[in-house]
Length: 301
Image (cartoon, rainbow, N blue to C red; front, top):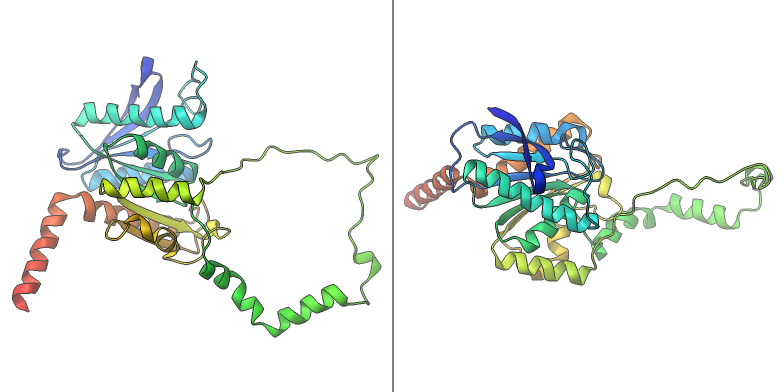
């Protein structure tokens, strides 16, 4: 495979690594843009983007992984755009660059966490996006989510006993109560935190419905690190059942994986999922093989 540094965007200010497909890129195959999350640069969490780009190249898909402005090797922007706006523009510039290089006219965007959020935003405004591979995207709790999370504990007699003793027990050791800090001697430090904001459920439904009308293909992979919002396979489909997802969604749950897929076994599972989905949905030769197999089955029947 061939990997090379590319500069693109306004003033050639953005820096990325383009990984060309092993075989000649077909116009029928989309190019793939790997979108970073948070302050991570183009290698991705635990080098996920490096492994994914090279594996996709083996399957015949060219990719571009790049640094958003102000991160890694891309300098800060000189305008007043907020990140949510500049990220979408830079994703579109990445598509322009990859398309000009290898002739791709359509694209699949893949990203983790906030990278998934930005990929989804870009898909809303650019019809060249025909697929989204979203890792731990936003999702909403369902009644079954609450049952999965709290049901076993509600059915446990020992849990009720512990709760009763904690609330009404009179033999608690006074030394077990938390000590109040000396305000004169101790100082509380406020550390900066990142707060990821989900769109409202109504906004998400409307946006998904518009994408499904374009026949966009969607692959959502959830990790155990997203358990605050997601805890069973099929939850995303259940939440957005009315948006036209049928036949366009692949949903996978990896409960043993953390949010950034640190474990290499879990990362390998993720790669297999994404590569299988790409081959099934966007590789013309794979689709032809599936049609031939289906025809053979019908004839045998």
